[in-house]
Figure 1 (cartoon, rainbow, N blue to C red):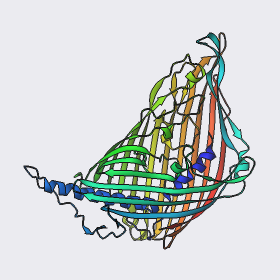
Figure 2: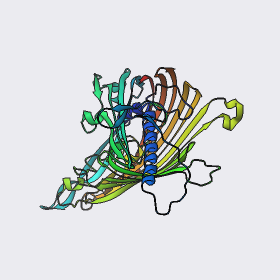
Figure 3: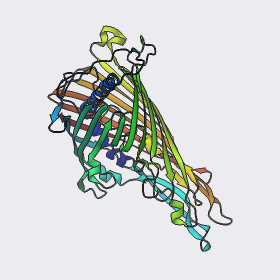
Figure 4: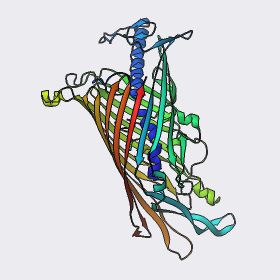
Length: 518
């Protein structure tokens, strides 16, 4: 469980977020790349679904029709020309329209970390009753932390890498809704060094699978029902507006989700025009959300119950407010693994998030001095108990600690992230992201044997990060960026009623990148 390693792994997510579109920055959205094309695809699907619902009502009118406000007309001016959008092409013999986008990103960076926080977990030998009577077994949980000085060998020199991606959207409009298919895949590779200072090239993997590491999304949607590999409904944004990530939960996972949209909420229409909302629920693969260590906490093999996630979003063109919650099953087998006489316990962890984003034109706030500058800001706050992956923090804590008798003590934590992006001109922007987290994990005191003192621990882990970015769009899909950041982490424990010494590390890092979108 190490800070820097998790930061490196997060670059795959950050690189996926940072793609640029071939067009110049537009004040309406100033979102770039894969995110921009996904948003455009989502808008197209929503427009087509709205048109499909209208046609269904026209074909099957109610006995007592009620006059409603007119909807925006969605026109297919050609076989695959949606409101003049010519990015879609006709796929022969299928009746589907398709569009392809992608980007190539190359980056060069330097990590200045010379040491890191390391953790060791073990179960202390203790006398416990088992099938053979009273005897010693690995029982009482314990956690230690210290500074690892060997990290400097892995950060000597610069690293380089690339993230190339392509996404494909296909849709077919029907009288009962739009059938859409979306695939986003890429190749993430970068250089890393081992403790001997040897350089090698790594490819992104998930559970040892290269294909899963390369496949970000792959889903089919009909109306509001979506099935396949898709972003978790818990997520609000990826990692802030910078290239290097802040502490935020973004994950794509196999899931089944359903979204119901509410259009044109007539609440304060003068103040909140075009206000809408969506309510979503999903059942998601829980395996990537598990933070065990294998000694103090161990999940059984297999999926078990899915994570149940709900999301509510309310928004207008200038803002969106997001609330989400998740339930995560904890089923422990660690105590039973060391003493088969102990039962297997289970419980549930939870996570909740509240977030929002607001966009504005500066001249609307400060007058002519604001010129043609635009800004957007987001803030997200998350809390959890027993499901620490939802914090988006590095792998420095575990979901729970199982006692020698199998009793589960859930870990807890909180995280906050804020990010601001300033569009100075249509081709130049700067952004800053700040994030912090804290987690608490521990075990109740337990006796090693008769007449011995009770052993237990409580450990707090904290982290902070600030990242600044400047990016220039050179036209024809080219973008160039420069970024710098600072990371601080600390572990502080308490043992046998006394406090342990805190251990803290901090380091800066810099990165430059270039990107070509198509």
